[in-house]
Length: 154
Image 1: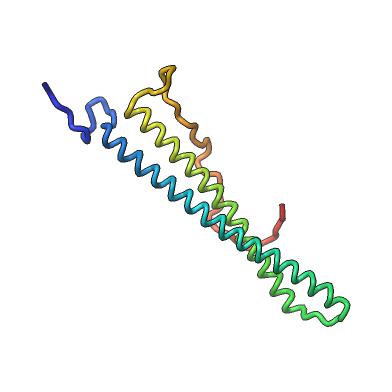
Image 2: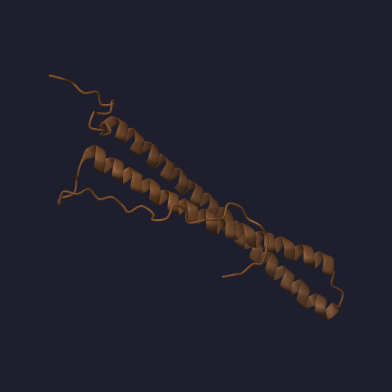
């Protein structure tokens, strides 16, 4: 009776079970790494937001008191506003990075589900494996760099 090696693809093109399980594990690890990256980005963004709103409040107070004293340093105020604009750009980076991470997680999950279905067969009661729908677009974020410019707060 012929034996089959669990790590060698069969002639029908089907991925062997052990190879599929290993690939599935690697994809799941990549997905978990993206989740950790998302938490790190969220924490950095929350800290950045706190500093941004604190600095904004202080600048508004300086402007309010400087108007009554009539001795505001325009250069220092301009520099402070430039730094706030940089903070807003960083917050926009967080938004774009979050969209890209979420998109990649969905794509990885779709690959994991398809590998499981193809390697292990249909598992659902009605005879079809459940495969989470992958993202329709190749990339949700078309920018690959951030430049300071006009800022619209949402």
